[in-house]
Image 1 (cartoon, helix red, strand yellow):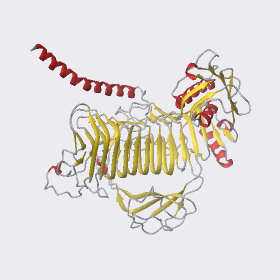
Image 2: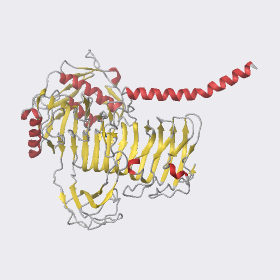
Image 3: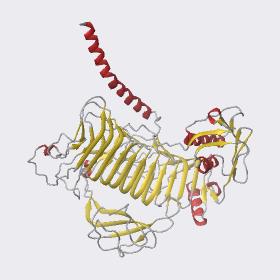
Image 4: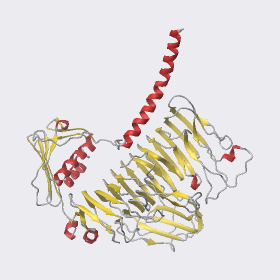
Length: 640
């Protein structure tokens, strides 16, 4: 009898063991995220091995003299070697088995890396510093190497930097106290007029006060390890960007040239253009995205964004999503063919302490130029007080195509509440990343400074009217599409408390991604929970933060006109999804409680899904996967 009881107890303990293990794994994951230690799964090393005369760099250290320029260089070297190989080398005191950063700088803007007697010697330049050269070596040599790289005795890499200007040449002090914005503006103005790159001093701290001035960037800019302090406590114009990355050609109003109407299947706009352009079409006679809820509104003018070639042909990747019975405005934004790169920089915003009202601050970097790369920006926010106005973004993409933001770090902003349009208290959206009327925009291997599971901070990004939006390798608090996105991809990423919020159409592909939120995907209820297209979930993990186990959350009372017919995803494909929760999981949350009854007659009915397929699904211990508790609207069966 006792042995049987022991066996039962052991069986029970054995059954609970995986459950305890999963709870422990979830806790460990959240702790690591809170400490900022979670490494993006995107990172793909370009080199399996780095050696010096055949000796692995694991046995090497960095030797650097005292001084900010050398300390920055040591950190940059360590980071670059880690990025390409996954090996972190640290500073040491020996000159044996070492990467040695020389104290004596070249006076001809030349960076040199040479290998002698089993050591690697690095020498920078007076104006260019050292870190800038290390980054160039990594980009040009290490990242292009295949499999392994050996620093053999006698190897020499030399790069001479030419055709650039510095902020100091135009009066910047870089002392962290003097307002350098005027000098920064004048530097970029001169660089734009003369086709020169702009370099920041690697050890400078540029203070930017509240002047109503914007620096226009039209040439490659390298901020390297320079610091920028943006003081928002007293500004002349809260809507003035600090930097505007501008196209080389001005916009063109083509309203009188395009066809008077265009159907959704149109392949040409009815006119030729001088060059390939991003075209934004508007019909002010039609309102879309008539928002419901605490931030209710009367909608926005029907807007669409397309890529168009010189012959007026609409790119197959950016088809129209609306019928235009009339086009009241059409603007063409010429697409620059060459890539412009803005890299580096450590930015700190001293937050505004304005009243908590919908008075948005910009005060960051606006990208209006197509074919732009933002590489390695770091942005932090400090001194958030008891009150504060929201931010539209620190980096904002607008009216542009083919922009990549990579290897960058952002910060979620503290949430503040105000009285919304419905007369009740509402938390204001405030963002560090934004995109509007942008196509082919990618955020690659980016993260944020604060805990992505901390709901005291607003979701880090917000977008409107975008097409082909991609997160790849990002650790963010959320992915969000407000007024529609056509085609959204989230892969190799980790998303926090706000999860994945979608409105739009096309294909939503979520792959190799972990979500820690109330629902895996939340189809925004304030815009009707509509997604007219496919949702594909592959090889993902979901850590629900409530007990409802909802994979796709969709809420629509079917009594509100959002300005369009609302669709639930027409095809749902799940191939590899683990849910860290016990019990039955529902692909769809209840759309409308009234619709539990077959006789409910909806004023604005939601179009239900057509096809649902599931394979390779698992959860913590036991329980299956079902379509929804709402059997009335969900007639679609799962194909396993």
